[in-house]
Length: 71
Image (cartoon, rainbow, N blue to C red; front, side):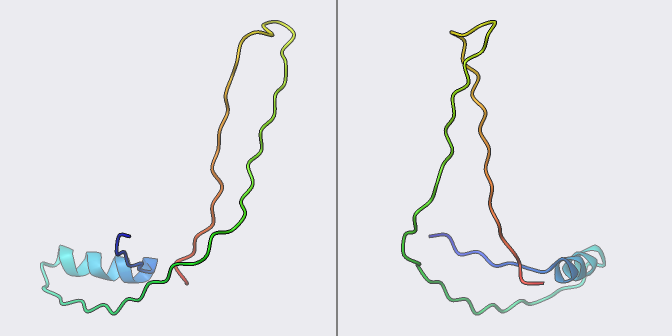
């Protein structure tokens, strides 16, 4: 488990402006974590035989995820 914190775009821009002006800053974070139970996940596997090279294989993979910083 790796501790991580999220910032909104506006707050990240504000911190960047502080940094560009060489302004010092202190950041205090209070964070909590939770481990959620496992869930059922699904994968799609399909095979389409080609007409020109039926013994050749092409693998296509992708990742779909959703995550929100809470803006």
